[in-house]
Length: 485
Image 1: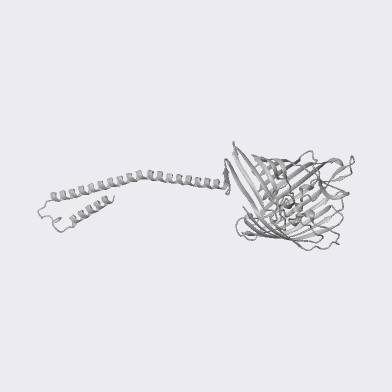
Image 2: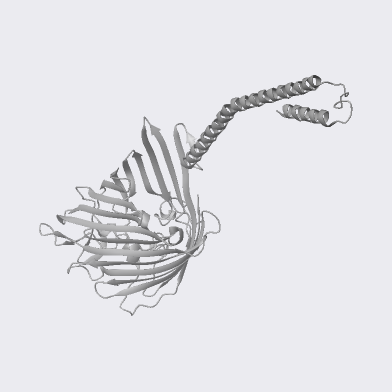
């Protein structure tokens, strides 16, 4: 096209030169005739027409080339867009797959095996105002309200006691696999807290005087198949997800449902937001007598405990409602009887604040004959009254609950404030040393300088009161360092 335009310009320039030139080109001899002039003009017009025709042909050729190139360019653009979409899809799929893969898991055959847990170091300074807590007692390791010493006020105030240990260090093994289109798995978890000292069980075991050796003990062990779970896990009556962050083993112990036991559980999604859980679980009736508040495990139960729980996830938070039905039983040659026990527990976690990372957590539980399910068996399931054919089980009523608020000060610093209580409706015949009520309040501060490392300090005050009016309190400062993996 540029060549055609140059030719056109040259032709017009030549024509102008011919017309305007003073010399021989235009100044024909005076003898030139009009016919000669007409012939020259005709020749110039023919040359101009030829140039215009060439220019038009060049334009047509250029237009044709452009028309031919446009579809090719459009096809190329469409192909690029398609490739970009496929690339984005592959990247998204890879990211989703990466999220599903266990970061620290490994393959064994067709199974994925993952090791998790934490190491936890603790130091506790405890002040028991109404008596001395003996060495080896679990209250020295974590908050166990049933062991708070009580008195009428005449007991000597014991000096503060310092303890340090790493017994809550935990190890867990998870195995998952796909079998003929089904999801199957297994889980085993243990720690060193359950058994107080290996010295009395294992030859050569340690003590606080030397090596501080402690026995690894089972916490949970179960298998899963699609919606079914078989084995030892948290009772379905308990919503573990609402327990607050605390330096303690449990924290708001007296107000919490807290049991691990063998069970068969079925979980079914009723909708995207609501699930139903049904379970039959290992029974155990814990009793006391009018003569003694000491709890006795009877192990003469005839039917499993039955639990149903609804879980709901809403825009306002996560909530659960659980119901428990059980048969209490004793048949020890001295006393023989059965009774009904029941319980209801509601729990929830409500996020709020910036990014909804702060939250309110709560649990409220009430019932009769469910003492071993609440507050680490603070209350008996039933009182055994009478002997022989005249014996009977009188279920003990309990009402318990807690509330806790967690607040993030910064991305790495947060605090939880919690209050917990349990009130026990003891029968009139119950022993005077039976616990009537317990409450506690605690506040903590946690700092996580890096991921999975938590440094915390917590202050707790607790009070226990018995049926005969005796009372005692606990004041504790608890410091922990915990590395999870």
